[in-house]
Image (cartoon, rainbow, N blue to C red; front, side):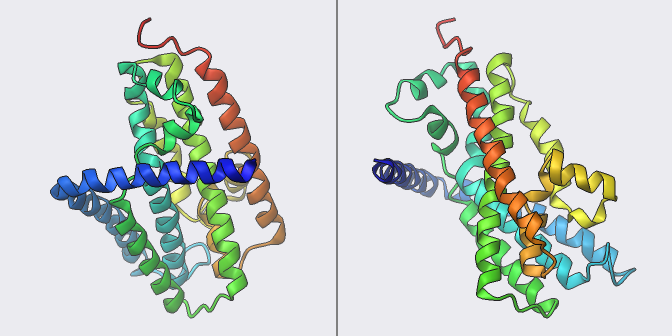
Length: 267
C-alpha cells in the first residue's frame, strides 16, 4: 500500500515536471534569465572567498580547495531545493491571499505535497550542473579522493539537508496561513538561511553548536560536505539524519494544524 502511494505521487510529480518544462519552453528568455540570475549569486559567493584567499592560505582551517568543495556541496543542495520546492515556497503566500489554496485542499492528494511540489523549477537543473562542476573542481583543487561510501553518505546527508530546508520553509509558510497578507514572510527564512551558506567552522564554538543542535542550519550543507572533506564524525552523521526526521515530522504536523485555521476564499 505504501509502495503504491509512493509510485502514485512520483507519477503525479512527473506530470507536474512535464507541464513546467512545456511552460518554460514557451518563455525561453525567462528560463535563461532565471539561470543567469542564479549564476550571478553563485559567482558572488565564489568571488568572496577568492578575494579572502588572496590574503590568506586558510580560513577556519580550510584550504581554498576545501572551501570550494563546501561551496560546490552547498550549490548542489541549494539547486536541488530550487528544482523541487523553492518556487512553491515563494508562491505560497499568494495562494492564500488569492484563495487559490482552496483548490489544493480539495484535491484527492496531500495538500502538503501539492503546496510544495506543484511547480518544479526546471531552470534550476542547470544550476545543479554548475554546482556539481564546482564540487568536482573543489575536490581536485584540494587533492581529495572520496570513496564510493563517502559519496553515498554525502548523497544521504544532502537529502537530509534538503528535508531540513523544506521543513523550515513549510514552517514559515504555515505562519502565512494566519497572516493571510504575508508576501514578505519568506524573507524570515531567507535571513536565517544565510547562516547555512557558510561552513560551520567559521563560527565560534557556542554559535556553531546552536546551528548544529538548536537551529540546525549547519546540517543543510556544512555537515554533508564534511563527508567529502573527511572531517565528518559518526555522531554528526547520525544527528543529521535524526534531526531531519524530527524537524520534518514537526513541520508536516504544524502545516496540517495551520490548515485547520485556513478560512478559504469565501471568508
